[in-house]
Length: 506
RNA sequence: GCGGCCGUGGUCUAGCCUGGUUAAGAUGUCUGCCUGCCACGCAGAAGGUCCCGGGUUCGAAUCCCGGCGGCCGCACCA
Image (cartoon, rainbow, N blue to C red; front, side, top):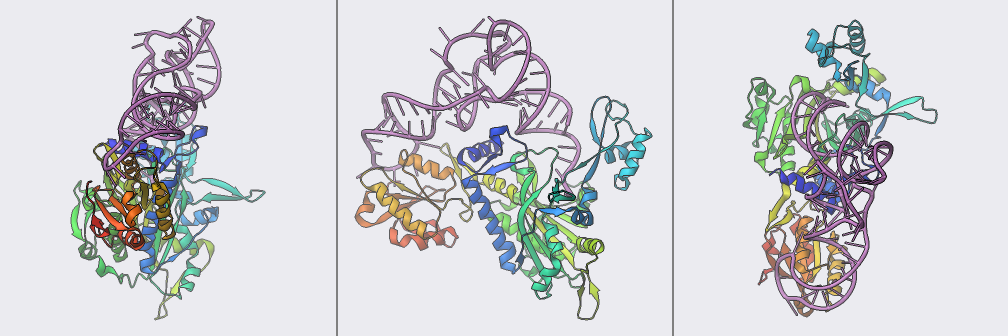
């Protein structure tokens, strides 16, 4: 079953979903280019997310720069928390992380070690190479953020953002005013972020430049309830909490979000709410419920800004559980930090006159990972053919238009039908190469849910056949009735059999 | 970053160990014929820096060294 991954990668590059970037120059790890099908698939997933997380809640969406001045990340804590001190052995050249080595050899907790301490301990020869016991070279810092210079003289140091969230915090004051001061306030952003990963691998899972989709939900900690919580509180989810993992348990509990929230397993109701929305979203991408779970971060893996984080994980055959989203409770960490560093007041006024800094809950999705997961989950084979059975709402191409044979005026008629469907706003692929069977096979491999065939009967009565990608069944329908029917079908409002009357000889 | 395996037309692979004329096959693509619903058939064609660089050799896809890229394990993933 690990072949699904190999097969999907092969289809992805051959058919134009994605492939390694810069390949004519030998390639560089961690960068991928999306082709026509991949770009559409990615955008459709993004639109579905936007519908479910943003539009439906009336949240605001912003777009903030990728390059930020260093002060932003000094304030946010990323510049200190993103920096690793790395030690290299003078003899064998082995490279190790300073904090891990010091904790291991001297028993000093990694969190309490700063750069000066590292230099002192290494200089005094307190730590040795774990591999060959030789002396270590002076520590070098490794920053996983991309650094650049801003301006002609380059005196201003800038960094590429490693997360989109800071944009929402930096612009919070303006946005809350535009929202007329009302909490809860949801600010959303979709955009590229950059992380200089040490070892990018596994295709779209560990990229150096990737797209993130985030909501920062601001609320008053004295009024932490989510007005929509009723919608999800009966929803049952699989949760593996921090405590369970510390007890060595590996099997998640199944519990309703309402119960998980009231029992305190999930600290903020908003967090629990978004976990419910998250499950709904991921399920709509075609991932079955039993392959989803939420896993609480252990303290040492939790980001510096978070008091509780749940990863939304999906089980894949060859990687096991992989993270596609993080649900973090960031409290007032970021707004307080920016208030402290910028001197700008981030507080809001309650009706009783008291002032407070809002708390923040953040659902954050890695879009590229979702693209891969959608591809791999939808992959199946039928009679030796590859099929990408995408949910209809995210399929890159809506419908293929095919003449039964490429002669006798059928191609011309098919082109007319293509025009009609394109004018109706559909993404249509016309194909007359090879035989009809080959064209169906190509259509299936691109994940196109419908194939429309123009045959000799079309020329007589203006009807065509529609073929279902997943069952290969066919129905017949009049051309002029098609546009609204197909649109409703793609939205999932009607089933395949409602598209027309069954067609024979299949 | 460390260790193991790997890199051959668009795709998948053979050839490499045991260096030797035009680098083989399948599939895909293109042209023509054919076509009456599931990768049909026939004929023909195009398509390769054998990952890159260096070395050994009369001669390197093949042997050696270095680099780049990929996969797996370890580490990392704020």
